[in-house]
Each structure stands twice: as C-alpha cells, then as structure tokens.
Length: 184
Image 1 (cartoon, one colour):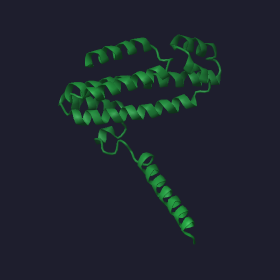
Image 2 (spheres, one colour):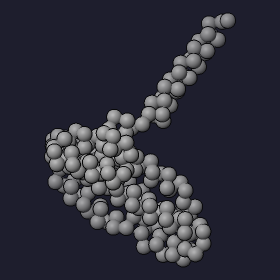
Image 3 (cartoon, helix red, strand yellow):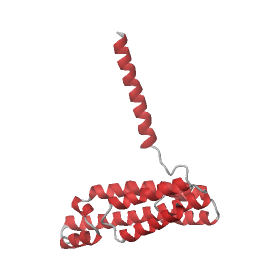
Image 4 (cartoon, one colour):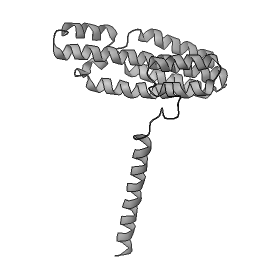
C-alpha cells in the first residue's frame, strides 16, 4: 500500500472511532444516571417534589444539576411533540389564533391530535420556564454567578420566541425581563 492509502484509511478509522465515541456519549448515556433514584425520571412530579425538598435543605448543587437535566429533557420532549403536529402553521400563530384554528377542526382526527399535542407542548414550555427561573435564581442568589443566570434566562427567552402559541407568553417575557433587570 502506498503512504497515501494508509493515511486515508487511518483518517477513516479515526473518524469512525470518534463518531462512535460521540454517539455513545450523546445518545446512549442517560443524563439522569448520576441523579438520585427518585429523579431517574426527571419530568415526574416526584422528582419536582424531591427538588423542592433538597432546596429547602440548601443542597443547591444537586437541585441545580437536576433542574438542568429537567430543562434538557423537556426541550427534547418539546421537539418531539412539535414534530408530531401535522399542521405546522400553528407554530406561527399566537395563542388565540392557534386556539381558534384548532377549534375549527376539532371534530377531525388530525385536529384533535394537533390540539392535544399543542397543549402538551405548551405545558412543556411552561415547565421549562419554571425550571429556568429556578435555575437562574440558584445561579444568581446562591452561587453569585450572574453570567450563567443571564445565560439561562436568555435561553428561555429564545424558547419563548420560538413558541408563539403559548398562552400568557407576554407575561412570561415580562417576568424574564424583570429577572434580567434585577440581575444586571
């Protein structure tokens, strides 16, 4: 074999090993693996109760870690719900327009499915909002990390901007703006 072929095969081998490692690290690992047994399912109500309990005990490191995982898991759930919605134009509507559009076709199978998926996605956005506020408060108040707190709130703003169909979206923006003003 020539040096050129050996080099090409070596590059392909290294790329394959690196790709396999990245796949294993990102897809096959469970982010809740290192969390308490109650929080193996981070989106469960029992996990949220546990977070409140450890927060009252001032175990902020663990609470922060759990809530960050909750945010990531809820974001992936949100993407899943949005991918299953048939009528993609609902994402460009505000809450009132989306509600009216869905009520017009609620009698159909597609309309009923989209309605429940959109409401579930809206609930998931609210969950992300609450967790993001809690994370930013812990980062700012307990760890004195203004930069991370602002980053968390800015990320939440981005999520709200991308989900126009959420009810009370304007109120959520006002709350985030108020939090950002207090932090800065």
